[in-house]
Amino acid sequence: MDKIIVEGGRPLEGEVRISGAKNAALPILMSSLLTDGLNTYTNVPHLKDIESTKSLLARLGASVETEGETVRIDASGFDNPEAPYDLVRKMRASVLVLGPLVARLKKAKVSLPGGCAIGARPINLHLKGLSLLGATIDIQHGYVEATADQLKGAEINFDTPTVTGTENLMMAAALADGVTVLRNSAREPEVVTLANVLNQMGADIQGAGTAVITIRGVPALKPVSCTIIPDRIEAGTFMVAAAMTGGKITLTDCQPDHLGALVDKLTLAGADIRIQPGRITVTGSDDIRSVDVRTQPYPGFPTDMQAQFMVLMSIAGGSSIITESIFENRFIHVSELRRLGADIKVSGNTAVVRGVSQLSAAPVMATDLRASASLILAGLVARGKTEVNRVYHLDRGYQAIEKKFADLGAAIRRVRG
Image (cartoon, rainbow, N blue to C red; front, side, top):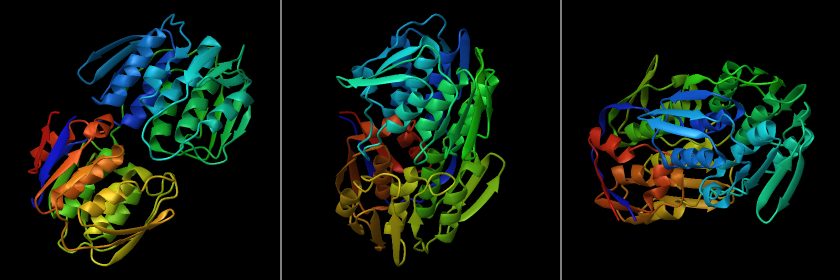
C-alpha cells in the first residue's frame, strides 16, 4: 500500500495549476446518460473517483473514451439499468446515476452507495424527491429499485440542503413532464455548473445557485461539449499550504469567486491574498493568528476544508474553535494530528485547537480524503519526516498532489507499496 513521506520546514514557492473539480465532473459525466450522441468533456481530472465513474458508465452500456484530460461519452441506446455493488461501493457519488436512469430508462437498480467514512450521508432525500416525481421506490437486498412510466413535475422541499440530492433530482426533473420546484436546494458552484451543462443540453432550469430551483421538463436532451470548472477544494488546500509554510504560492486556472469564505478566514489568520482573474497569490505570515470557523453549506465555510484549516490553526497563536455542522464523523483526523503534537480537544461537533510552536513528525494514517490532505499539510511544517499511510484516499480527489507540492519546493515523495 502506498505511503507519502514528507520532510517539514521548507517554505513553498512558485505556481501551481489547479485541476478540474472532481465534484463537478462526477455529476456532469453522469448526465451523459440523459442524451443520445457523443458528449465531450475537457479538463477532467485524473482521479480514482473519475475512473470509477467511467467504469460504472461503461457497465451501464455507455461508450467511454479518454484522451488526456478529455473524456468522450456516448450513451446512445444504453439499456442496462443496474449499477452494481462492486462499483457503487467505491464511491458515494455513484448514486447520481439514479435520477438519469429513471428519467431515461424508466427504471433503475442501484446499490446503496459507499465512500469516505465521514458520516452517514443517507440518500433518503434523493428517494423522497424521486417518489414525489412519481417513481415507485423499493429497497431490498442492499439495492434501491425505482420505476416510473413517466416522471411528473412536483414541488420538493429538502429538509436540509443536499448537493447530490439537488443534482440527482435536477437531472431527473429535466426529462419529467411538467414543472418541478426544488426548495432549500444546495447552492454550491458544482450545482450551478451542472445546471449550466443541462441547459446547454436543452433543459430549462432556472435559479441554480439560489435556494429555489425551477425545472421545466423537456421531451429530450442533446449532447454537449463542456469544460469542467476548477477544483475549489484543491485550490483551498494549496492556499492553506502557502499560509502555514510562510511561503508564496500563485494558483493558476482557478476561480477565486468560489473561495470567498476561505479567503476571508485566511486573511484573518494573517495571510496576504492577492486576487486576479483566474489567479490567486497567497503569501504566508510568520505570525499566524487563531480564527474560529464553523462549516456551513455554500457560500459558508466548506466542510471539505475543515481538516486542512485545523492544521493551520494547530500552529497559530492562541486558541480557535472549529465547529463541524455538516458531517457527524468529520473529526476522525484529530487523533492523527495529536500524534504530530497538535493540541486539540473535541466535544461533540466542536474542536478547541490551541496552537503549538512546532509539530513533530510521526507515522500517521489517513482515514478519508480530506484527512489525507490535512496530514500532508501537517507534514510540511512538522520537524522531521512524517509518514502518511493509506494514501489511496488521497488519489480519489487530488491529482498528483505530491508532484505539485514537490514542484513548489516541498521535500515529499511517494513510496509504492
